[in-house]
Length: 238
Image 1: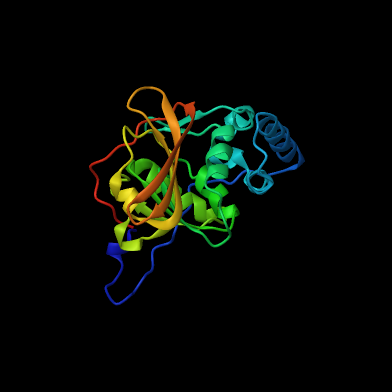
Image 2: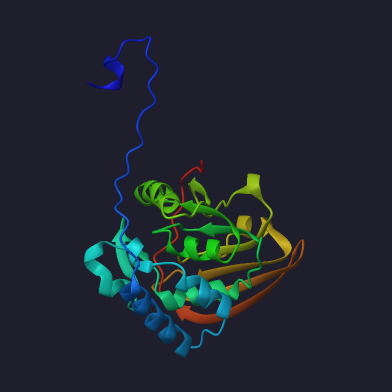
């Protein structure tokens, strides 16, 4: 019997069903995670706060249980909708560039699997995350709270940011953009930092922008990476 077949005098609240079976995080997976982060550290990531935050996030939660080994390899991995869960080194690199402080208000462009978002939350920040792919938005919005992470979710165009919730202390873009969107710069606080991979081709240059004044920006071009492209043309809504 469906809800609309019950007598009208009965007020039923629909049961919230979960489709996610959360795997165990045991000594084995914790050991695999530590080994992975040792590799990330050897590649030059020295920010202890970032590494500790990543140690607290079980990466295998964000992949199918059949891909345990891949979850703890330092590689990106397909997650559906033509998107990937970022390489752990890349997550650590971008997060370190943000110079996060506890309580920072962070806008993330590209929720994806939710892994990077979870790391940001473990750093003690308040995260507003935007996803362009409806399939990934729906999954992350249901899954992340089940494992204890509660950012503000938005489905929409990352190029436009979230003007109604600006300004932000930090902005992180987790997909490749052909240029730096002016809307994101405008929504950054003075003194704030934007980290974004910039490049129209298959390779992007990681770029760190520090907002020195209302119209004054310091731009630093850093290492090269490969990201999926940043998509547009969706209105946002939470």
